[in-house]
Image 1 (cartoon, rainbow, N blue to C red):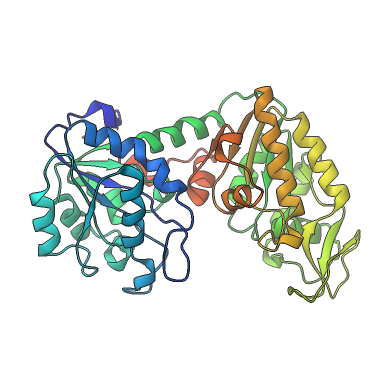
Image 2 (image 1 turned 120 degrees about the horizontal axis):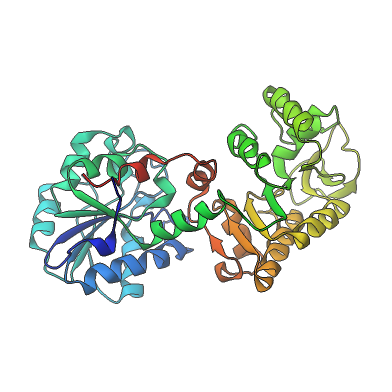
Length: 394
């Protein structure tokens, strides 16, 4: 059965519940510090309003332990008001669904919008409980899912609401599906994957999948030191996972010509402003690696320069510290250069997006920047996400 797109629905006069991903970063009191995900949602919201419908927006923010004010969506609603040029109504913080919320939704007029509080204030959201899904569905006539970053979750708002309402996907989710799907078919070659981040345990599936597709896989971050330890190299106190050495060794034996590992690294005794990084080929037992070294950066740049298709996910070191961001910034810059030559470049969300911002680059410097870290990693393995599977027209 086919999946409905937002443009397939008759929206005039309808109340439309839209699941978004407004899990945006904030300062210590919750004020929005990066509105990229809010901006990405605007095409869907503007289309619904232009069709003469009213909007009920729902999202989560972070992983609150109970009703934590700093994870409220109120600052997000304020930022959205400035971007869309309309007031955004909100009810009291708790509970997420209340008589007040029901009455506000029922009173909405075409062209008006309201936002629910953080869905994760209600534990039933992450439990995937149908009771919450039914309560959410009762607010509206139609449901739009435009929250790709949580489509790999079996949350009530993602897989539950479609059981009770006609459901379609929005423009941002459409873009995610279309661009990421291109990585699963025939691509321009050379095809280079770049994988960073701390743990191979969270990315083993995508690493295995990509090694069957790419011509080269450039590896940095904690993942690289698990691979190096599997080769019997000294990694000192660098982040690595001893329990996964057997998996790393197996992949190195199966794909010896594809996996490109650091040959030198910047290391420190401890993380802290008083500790200077030094460049080494062999990591001392009492040090930890914090970034790929100069020769490794040069090798990675050469491989990227030859690429015609690139997928990058995860930083190459402790990029949060300016002193250790060199490798990650180099990758961000080198991949950005490729777009002008017609190469297809995709950034897989998560910390890679923060790295782009830190490098002074923009989403438009790449073919596509995914809003979903974990979701994009599941998708590019060729697996169907629960939230996308739930879109099937009943």
